[in-house]
Amino acid sequence: MENENQTVIKEFILTGLSQDRRTQILLFVLFLFMYLLTILGNILLICAVIANSRMHTPMYYFLCQLSFLDLFYSTSTVPKLLLDLISTMGGRISYIGCIAQMNTCLFLGETECILLAVMAYDRYVAICFPLRYTVIMSWRICKNISVIVWLGSFACSILPTVSSLRPICKGNQIDHFVCEIIALMKLVCGDTSVDEAKIIFASFFTLLVPFAFIVASYMCIIASILKIHSVDGRTKAFSTCGSHLTVVLMFYGTSMSLYLGPTKHISKKHKYVTVFYGVVTPMLNPLIYSLRNHEVKVAVWKVFNI
Image (cartoon, rainbow, N blue to C red; front, top):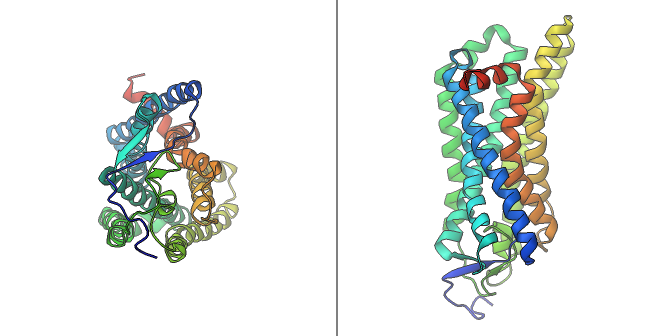
């Protein structure tokens, strides 16, 4: 019944991660530290690439976009989470603010999914076709790819979501710490099985298809690396891919466990998964690329004039 107890919702209440005050303070300190580390790490990585002319290559061009995504993804959720943890008013958010946060997260998340696939393709071309790399991955092509990635993600995430908003009639309390689409769906009127099927269908194209592309790319990359006779050559090739592969496994692993699993019940596990890919992963990405890539480490030190 679409008319059951429909009310005009002006704000939502986010239940958060814990109702215990001591736990909230501890989480506030932890997430504040992680957020500051996220901001510092990603800005440093972007500055290092911009300042070092040797890093003005397609690989680092896409890496800068990844850092940019991580900056804005964490900023779309963490500051509000921090405010809710120290506020005595509870996790209140306006209807418009909630919808804006949900769409922003969907847009940035889908963009990162596709961008990681593009980065895998870049590594595939660099290792499997090194002599043709500058032609295949020219700056004009890289810029066109970026436009397609960002506009395509916008068209696939925000436009369908805005056009299919449904009335709320099951209260205004969201069992989450962010306006997550699966949690928000539990409040809409009527049967949501069709909407849940749409989410799984959309996730197939935004998660499984790019992930399958990445797996196929790395199968070709590994086959090419094994043909390299030089040990140093193999080590260098593996090191350039290791960082990206680590980030892919973290991001896709957590995202697929949330959006490709059953959506009937929002449990604490879903909240923890969201914390990992929404808070932890953006913090770890610049650290992973810095620790596993000597060129990035040198460039970061140069930013500090060390």
